[in-house]
Each structure stands twice: as C-alpha cells, then as structure tokens.
Image (tube, rainbow, N blue to C red; front, side, top):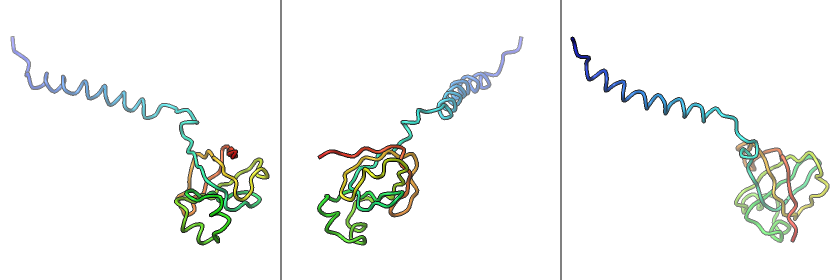
Length: 123
C-alpha cells in the first residue's frame, strides 16, 4: 500500500483555517450595518444662515463668530462645514451652538453635507 505525500496533507491542513477565516471576513464585510453607526456628528457655532443651509464652525467661541469677518472665520476655525438643513432651519440663528448628524461629508473647505438631524445646544 502506497503512503500519501505528507506535503499535500500539510498544505490542506494550512489552507482550511485560512479559507474559514476568509469566508468569515467576507461575511462580516458585507453584512448590513445599523444606519446610526454610519452617522458623523458635527458640533460648533453657526456663523451664517441661509434659506437652506448653515455654516458651522468649530474651535471658535460665540463672541469670535460675531467679531470676525467671513474670511477670518474660515482661517481661524479648526473646522468649517456647510450643512444643508431641510427642516426647522428657522430655529437656528447666527451664534447658535448646535450638534448636527450627517451621513456623508464632501471633502472641500468648508466641507459640505446634508443634516439627518440636528439639536440646538442650550446655554
């Protein structure tokens, strides 16, 4: 009776765990995720309000927002975001501190996104 090659046996023994790992990894990679996990939170002071969007700046106080001109705001802020808000934008005024939840952020300066929700911060 002829013995089987031990190298083939070792290759199979090494490939099975790798194959199982690969299947498990692919399963996790394509599994649906909770939509809330995909949201990003932006926090800051509103520096400008239009009919459809706000300019949200980070790293500045409310007083600095009122004192600085538009160009200085963008230079001094640690972050700036142009956020489209489709509902209840009338609740927001320049100088309001807000938290905004967004899903996608367009890479520009200031960044651009659409709010999923927002919350006005109370003093």
